[in-house]
Length: 236
Image: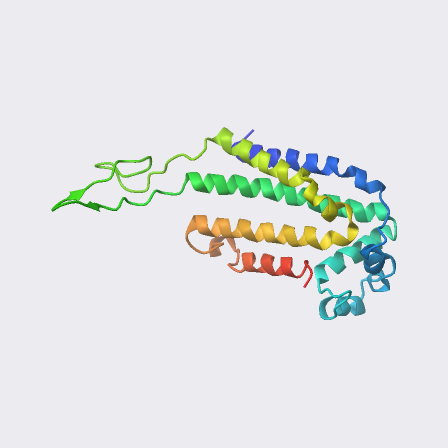
């Protein structure tokens, strides 16, 4: 198994763990709080026509503007009707996907930390002469160019740290409301696009140039676009 496949395998295992933990939510009904207002009694989500998209993108409802969230609820209704199982299943899948992205993001952040070159040492001024600071890991030694890196964590340590972070994110009780309450779909979608925008920025910062090169046919506005998608998912 290649190292790249191992990373995605690790992220997949952690996301599956998050999925399994929340399977109990599939037995839940709609809650009498916002679920009735957002789904059960909301006739606007019962058809994916021009009137629906106009309402989703240009109107406020229940004090919120989150068109992507409305679209997700409308798709759920088109597939499941008012069967709460399907609506809860979508929430669990989204949370599992967010957990997957968290693991991959932590892997990339820690690997980027390992590949960050140490800055050149600043000379210390003494009395009439310059004193060289003591050498540290990654500092330039005589005859060597700047840019050597000090290892922050080895490959195994990075994998353990990423898995631990993913499990903490995926299994922490703090997320129960967002996952088990259908109306909190907006939190899950907002988190997804927010995390993806961070990943795009990490890629940009690591390259030190355009986010996606013209050779790959990938535009520079992808990260800001993901951020905008996140804003159109969360309550505004």
